[in-house]
Image (tube, rainbow, N blue to C red):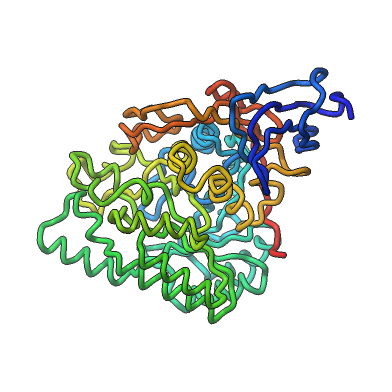
Length: 464
């Protein structure tokens, strides 16, 4: 073996492999991991000195909203260029965002439009979930099955929100279609009736400010909907993913369903692990409006336990950026009621540093678990072949972390276009300093050096 076989060698780092942590060298050829050895010969190719650093798989964020128009008609703040720039700075090398269908549109055209946007702007590799809001007009019979066959195997369903929510019959139809075609159905699971009832009571009482948002999404709404979707999956035999679990009870329901053999995976997000509903008592509650809302300290503890046990297998960002102005959160005015404030927060860039600080720097679960929940498990859940692990033949998606580098988040220090950081004032220890995507250095010394449009679309493989 000679170094001339490689395009790049990353050497001397503490590397998180699928089965162990080891100080090894990584040889890259044609964008793939071609060798992993105690020592590879130096010289003759590009080199990255990883001594004193931790090397983990590039993050896979399987839940982010990019260049997407909401059901209310608002474009979120990020283009594929700005969102994936921010993702790369945070150590993420693969995103799965949404091709969001609005009623009356054909799904094939929706996916085509988002594919073109990503092809122009994305710095990193990407796939899509299909948000299905209209199963009529041939979508259920023709477009969605054809798209699944092409590799768009993930369907996103809302059980609440005007214009996008699906009734139980439509959900069951989609579950059966996904089961038979080799797809997976992901759920924003909240009971629409409970949300409407709670919202009406708050409005009637004149409690309409952003600080009341959490009360409009009671935990019972999540609990009921997760339970129902698990029973639907059990009835149909379909594979499902429950997005953004926020409650103790939600995690318990998933665990019970998994024990019964239901094919259900679940994720949670940093804002449920690091925030509570107390954020709505701050002076600027609109910036934290998201659904489901952050809950209580006891829920945080339960979610961490569920991660440790494997009940919840993934941590994703649910990046949904809206600026704090008339283009976003305040489209209906700075004093808009919570019912008129865009839901979502930026999170692509902060997801991995927050989790690294908690899991590695503070010793909660450790490095291998960090790589598992932020990269390996999301890649496996959605059939992203060659992503999410440092292994021979995999894409050379590598994030080199300085485990001692400390940063306190500022008011607007992210690389997206949201214009604010919801984690302002929080300090983290450990940041990615060099990031590779398919062997290309896309972040060097904490500076993005990749060009828009270099990212590739990833087909989702059929389940084995």
